[in-house]
Amino acid sequence: MTVTTTGLTVPAASGAASFTPPRLAERARGLATDPSEWLHRVRLDPRGRWYERVHQDADHEIWLISWLPGQSTGFHDHGDSAGAFAVALGTLEEQRVSAARPVGAARGVGVGQARSFGPGYVHDVRNASDAPAVSVHVYSPPLSTMRRYDVDAGGALVRLADESAGDW
Image (tube, rainbow, N blue to C red; front, side):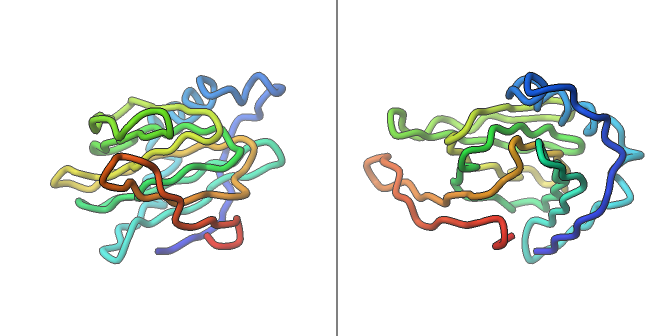
C-alpha cells in the first residue's frame, strides 16, 4: 500500500456543526463529483488498496482511496472520529456489524452515493465488482486510532488489533 500526503483545494469548514456525519458525507460527495480534483492522483495497486491523504487540518482530514476488484478494508472502526465516504468511480459494498447487531447484508454504494457514521462504527468496505473503484473519505477529528476486528462463528465482534495514526 502506498501513502502520500499532498495538498488539495478544500473549502474551509465553518464551525463544529460542519463536521456532523451528514455534513462529512456532503463534503465527501462534493469532492467525489469533481474528478478534476482527484483523477490525476489515482493509482491502482494489485498488492492492496492505494490511498492518499489529500487534506488535513486540526478539524478534519480527507483521503482518496482506489480499489481493484476484490480489495477490501476488513472490519474496522475509526476510533473516536466520525466519518463518511462517497464513491467517485465504480461501485463498493459496505457491510456493518456492532456488538448489538450481527453482521448485516452488504449494501451497494454507487457513484455519487455516500455513507456516514459516528465514532465506533464498525464496517467492512470492499470492491465486489469486476472494475476498479475510487472513493473519497472524510474524518473528523482526524484519525488517531483505528481498531481491526473479525466476526466469530456466532456473529460476535472479536477485536484483533489497534492501530495508531503512525501506522498508516
